[in-house]
Image (cartoon, rainbow, N blue to C red; front, side, top):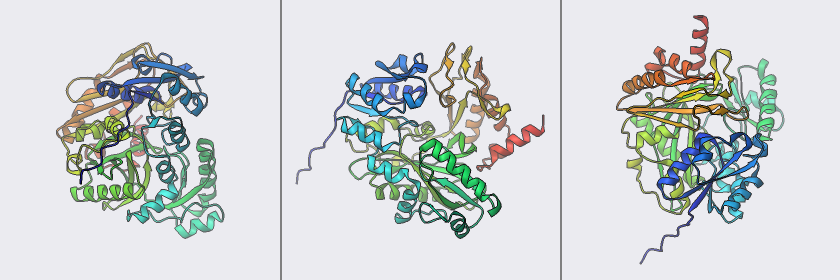
Length: 460
């Protein structure tokens, strides 16, 4: 029997519904694929590099995100105005908003991401947890779904210490630990209030708290033909208040046997969810390499470059090809190829000496690192003014080398030559981390950054 012809979706222009470094990152892949780009920007981002590099750009509103980058009607109008055939959401803002994905589709355009149904099913964490259980993916013991009443009684059933988690959203928002019954109510009130403010949804659920775990995640790609591949894991344990600072691949802790189990779990979950596109399954891992499902990010991750470098792929290109209806061009064995060790340093405009306070302002000098094995993803330049309205990330410094030891040496060299003046950045704190014995030995967990901060403070 002759196979049915491949159904592809053609488009020659993509609107990028985002800003900054990720918008510029997507523009570069579009150029290499021979596709045109349309950028959107707020009044505060008029001089951002992504606006300059796009084939065309449309201002969609005032500086505040609610009036621009989160304004679905404005983004859709910009897409129609430019004649875009597809929309790429990047990460953050509307990237995991099912209503936005549906609006793109209803407007006759292609959404470069999973279906609205998959976003909903995996975006609500309690539902994703139930789906993981059905797919035989290990989960942390916890409440059976969303808690809406009898909070303390349900908490006692789970047991202390526990983690209170918002059922919607991500980025560490709406998450608070409760180590005992005494601090439970305050933690609950804080988590619900933060979730309500960030996502408009204050619902929560509970999980047993694994103290000082590793944060391990698996990047996956799934096409619309039933093919799913999972890439070598990323270790994202170096974080502060649930915000990642350094990511690397592969993890210095994960064994080949555990890697295979992680990837098989991620693939099972993706298939159970009917997932298509690029996404990430996040796990917590204890000292015995037991791992537990945490959540799914139905979008591109900030830390995707380390996977690209280690596995030799362009994840944005894969996203676009999947959206075009093409089958994956790589096998699971190819996806597991580990050609080097990669480390990403998130460089933020923050003053780490003052509780990482945001430090917007004019960049006077911008001398980025370069040389062998160094990649810099950034949208800023000398003379650029960092606005105060958005995330403080100004650059991602990614290094790669044959071994982790060599990659660490390259990180030290690259951070040392990365010169920025006019604003405070987190470059000095990354240099402090690279001097820490536990980190250099690969003995990390989600509490290590706070320990390094305390140790550094005591030395002053």
